[in-house]
Image (tube, rainbow, N blue to C red; front, side):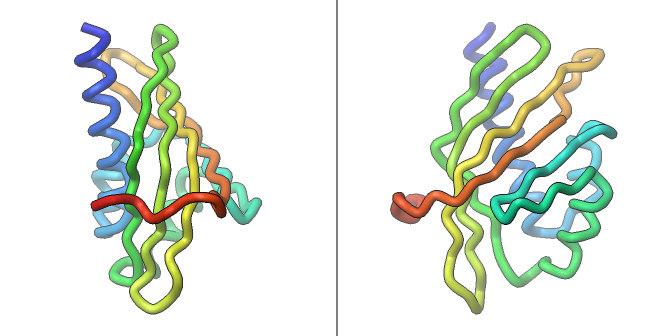
Length: 127
């Protein structure tokens, strides 16, 4: 059962970045808790609506590619860690690491927090 939950969360986690990349904001909003907070690698901190709004002008300019995703379970909280490449069409790729936390409410997992930091020491994700 736990392996299935971890696999589902891993897929869900990758989906967050895919939806952010393609501009599917309604679908993305549904995966985020109302109290979601994003702490960017730049130090900027945004709430759910601020992050969604900030993504809109970026659609088509870059892709967010999550890889090396690992899931750590804590009852109704899941900690998901991975690498995140921000692949710009007309600028250098940014290499990051992230921790995204999910909370299960009434059987549904919602992201509650993400902290991203630069990963200057690693190679691009294998696609």
